[in-house]
Amino acid sequence: MLKQILLTTFLTIGVFYTTYSQDNRGKVRGDFQTDFQLYRSDSLLGAPEVPEKFRLNGYLNIMYDIGNFSAGVRYETYQNALLGYDPRYKGSGIASRWASYRHQDFEITAGNFYEQFGSGILLRSYEDRSLGLDNSLDGLKLAYKPVKGVYLKGVVGQHRYFFDKAPGIIRGVDGEIYVNDLREKWNEKSLRVILGSSFVSKYQQDKDPLYVLPENVGAYAGRINILHKGKVLFAEYAHKINDPSAVNNIIYKNGEALFVNMSYSVKGFSTSISAKRIDNMNFRSDRNATGNVLQINYLPAITKPHVYVLSGFYPYATQPNGEMGIQGEIGYNIPENTFLGGKYGTNVSVGFAGVHDIEKVALNDSTSVGQSGTLGYNTNFFSYGDELFFKDVNFSFNRRLSKNLRMRGEYVNIKYNVDVIKGGEGGIVNAHIGIIDMSYKIKRGRTLRWEVQHMYIKKADWYNTDQGNWAMALLEYTMAPNWSFGVMDAFNYGNDDKNRRIHHYIFSLTYTKNANRISLSYGKQREGIMCVGGVCRIVPASNGISVSITSNF
Image (cartoon, rainbow, N blue to C red; front, side, top):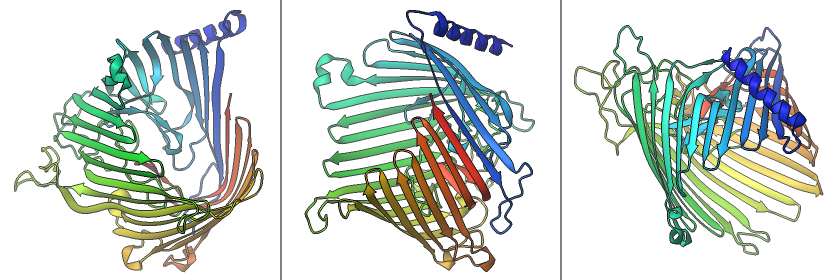
């Protein structure tokens, strides 16, 4: 009841000011999105029978700004949720509502909000509709700048849990110091330093009949960011006290995470290297939750997010119970009018990423590694385990062949541990992927683009849980600024089962005008995994018509 009163109150205020205020009428803004799909069953593809035949996800944000005051609501509807989204997204209702007021160096937000401390390894509240993820906090957020260069934040709230709330309460504070802003003469220096620190805790009542579980779980983190001309160093370390949960098999071991990134760039050359170590860092507002829901923190992936279809077949999902990895990339612009660079120059890049498990040793002879109700295991911070989770070696080039013709090529070798990342039995998939992407500018606003891709997997490197070799081709025609047409076919010609050597064709049409976009596609979608930044969801096989409509106002 109180929610409805608050909602009605600030909307009434908004309407009043919009209608009657002569000095400042404020501004109403928002966005709308709906995605729906008409499904057909397909036994060979593995597309299931959908009783409704038709499913829809819909979102509407309405926000109002006047002076230092802002407020907004979001309405969502799932009739029923599209396949691949959590079925607990069901029905319709107000998913979030918020109000915020800013005055000089102070800001307060009440209701639903998103927030991130540092890189997010301690707290990140955000939305990603492509993953069906929304872990907004419902409560209070305060932000204050006491002096120049010092920024403080505090949050208290509960996670959104579909159309309800999570059982746990999250409390957190974060401070950041821009050292160069503390003194005027330091602002003139090319070396810039930013320091930060966070503390986050969650409270959840212990109702477990077997174990005594901590009701308050605290975690802290410290970070540093150093920038000097083209050089950047960022490092963040987090530590969490014991937090037995469904994900870590109810062990009482403390958790920790370290993330380091270094980069350097000058004209025509760039390089970066990242490293991370994660040990028992699953952190949720409900200790019994699994999957993508109710995650307090975010464990960034250091693997390259591939954008092409076949190289995106095997994305990496971060393993919160333990992983150790490194990633590096070098980019270079070969000058124009040279033998290798050609008339217009050529951009090349080489990248590498590798992730292993961490070394885990049993506590003693009477317990196994990760045994429930124990401290779990012993580990050496600088030692990695023998099991490979993921490896990616890639090379790409981008070259303009003529005034109107551009070519991009890419080679990717991925080693992917199906048992760990997807679950089940599949061993290590060793995939070799080659891609050629060409685009030709016919005339102003008219572009023709085509791709050919191939993925080769040695038969000894995959089991029946995977499908072997693939070939893919795409043709796309763009009539800027409004129309785009495309046709794609991914052919699983290497499947051991000849009946399942299927053409996964997709026809697409997109129309864009101003802030409105309508996309229509028809075809067959293979089952797979979709990942964004190491967070993933299963994408089921489907056959049918999909429509997406978005608008901003």
